[in-house]
Image (cartoon, rainbow, N blue to C red; front, side):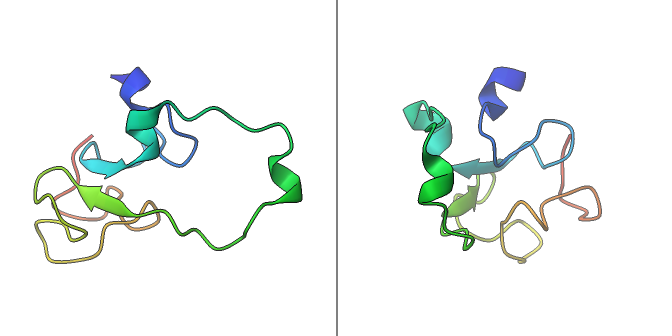
Length: 76
């Protein structure tokens, strides 16, 4: 299961198992010069694999900072 969460944005055991983003499917490889072009705004589009939308089963947005154990719909 941990290879599913190979993304640097999603951490296994911290975030919900249903959170997804495109880089999880395209084989994200760290760029050694990334810090030169780093944008502090996270423009990643996240979705829930349960609802297939940007909102979880509880109606709240899907993002790593909120898809954690404090939500009733969160699965670990």
